[in-house]
Length: 510
Ligand code: F6P
Ligand code: MG
Image 1: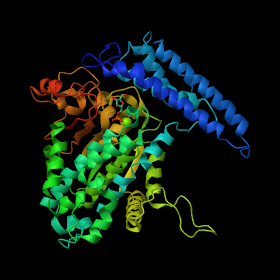
Image 2: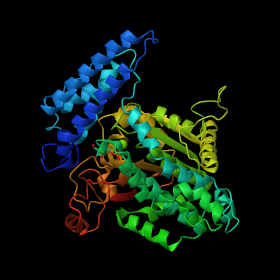
Image 3: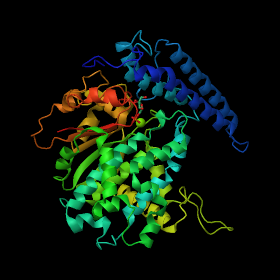
Image 4: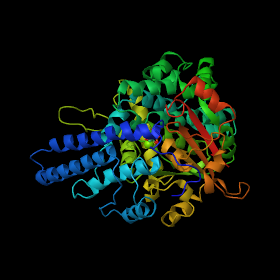
């Protein structure tokens, strides 16, 4: 916990860190309490453990209420009292680095991680709520509201034949080869979709306004999702599949679509995706690790990207890294991962005596769309079952440590050694980026490879050194890798550019 530069901190009143401690986190904490309150009030008398669960819920609410009080009054941090396996590590860090510190005095990164670990403590101290995720309901609701964009993508990925060229979209690797224009174009499309999927992070939406989420996805998917409900039917009506986003890329990009992509690309203030492509296209049956960020729509598009890597023959193994505890509201936990696959292909109710139609989580009117979701879900489940996709989680990702410590931190050695078997590490989202660059006040022109410290110091010519890439929409007061003059220009055109989530970076360290 010795940042290489001045760390971002809540002491700077003009910072997003300060605004987060002052306004965002108290709201997140209150909503956690509301969730527990609602859940225990919904317990029924048929539950034999109702009384015990209620008592424990009241205790949780008391503890989290206390946490809000400490945060709002900037009380000193206190050690953890539960028995999770990471507790000694946290308490050691507190004693060593922050013995007398508090929310606004410590680094913003530490304070914020400490908050989510404290929320976990309240649940970990109980018997019946140990594994409860107070953010699950929000993740679920917002994913449901993403139906349009989810269905649109599923239809495009499972349409077996491009009616114009007669080629199978799924077979691009066989038909065109990994270095074809189609495969290349699809790559840049996938990168953008995976990148902008990060814009719909729940912790930024105080009051998840579902219309707002849909609008974000519509903007992100540009022309495709606004027309998504007609994706399948338009394919039926016109053999040219005129409105479909990913298909267009495989078929040859339309003008409208190209300009939408350009508009998005302009918002990527530092874009190393060509460098990334040069790595990806050299891979044959490689291993790619994705350090996940958020559940819901972002996870879905990450899976779409992973599917592409496998389908194109670049990767025969994709390892997904999830969080073990509820983290920054929307982050993927192992449960969310499996739940997401299940919602695509398993009915939520099976047939009954009165109805012979099962119901599903997503309910598009068109049976072709429902079928597309199921096909995709089943295919992805097969990837998990046959080991092509692996899901893992490690305590390091929810520790207080920045990724500078990944190569040397004693309890991360198993993780680091395993990750070195990989060809490419893809870090998703804002927090992973903050942890990569140690959440410091770097000059914005600092090269990314320098800002990520030890992870950027490998010999790029050495055999077998994995490449690291971050796909991140900007939501914190740190950005690196910009050219001279970009910061000054952005300050003029969009004063909030660093934190609004409207701008992004794709940064590679070879
Ligand atoms: O609250 C801190 C923060 O890192 C924000 O900067 C960001 O909005 C959010 O948490 C998490 O973002 P992401 O899900 O992209 O990591
Ligand atoms: Mg997140």
